[in-house]
Image (cartoon, rainbow, N blue to C red):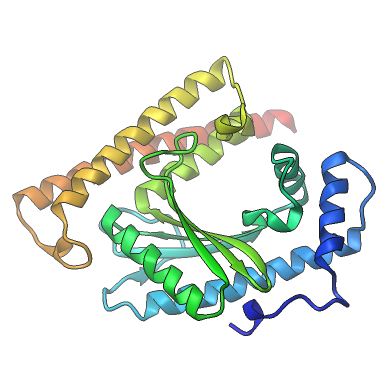
Length: 280
C-alpha cells in the first residue's frame, strides 16, 4: 500500500527518462537499457503491491470463493490471481501499435488479472468493490472499462485502469468462460499470428487465420449469450446454490459451452506443439 502512494526515487529513474526510452524503442534507436530494466522492475513491484490489495478484497468477501492455481470452471466457486510485466518484444510491439502513447502512459506494462467463477452481475459488483479498495489504498484514479457487450476482437472482460503515484497498471476481471476463451485466443494467436488480436488497430488476417478468427468470434458471441441467460437465473452472490430444474438446466448449458472451448483449446495446443516440433 505504501509503495503505490510513492513516486519513483529520482536515483532510480525519472518519468522523462522512461519516455525517452519509449520513443527510442518505438523508432528502433539505441536506448538506455539500465533505465528500461529499472522501470520494468518498478512496474513488477507495483503489480505485486496492487495484487496484495486485490487479494485482501477477495478474502474479506462473505461469499466463499476458493483459490485455485489452474483453469477456472463455471460453478466451481474457484478463483485465480496472476500477474506479469510485458516482455521486451511485446512492449516494442505495443509502442509501435500505439504511436501516440508514451511508455509510462501504457496501461498494461504492469498487468494482473482475477479469473473467477462469476456471473455477469457478480463481475460488475466485484469490479466496483476492487475500484473502491484501490482508491482507498491510495490510487489517484481508477476507471472501469467494460468490454462485455462491445468485445475487442472477440475478447470480453472488465478491466480496471489504475493511476497511482507509483505508475499505471491494468487489472483484468474475467469470468470462467471469458478466461477460457481468452486462453483459446492466445494459443490461436501463437499459431496464426498476433494480428488476430488487434482488429481494432487495423489488422487484416486472411486465409486460415481469417477462418479460425471467424469461428472464435462466433464462440465468443455464443458464450456471452449463455452467460446472459445464467445471469437472469442466478441472484448475485446468493441463490447460485439453489437446486431446481431451471438452475440445473442453466448449469448444464454453461458446462457444455465451457466444454466446447476446452476441447478446441486442447486441439489448438496440439497444433501449436506440432508446429513447434517441426520448427526444431
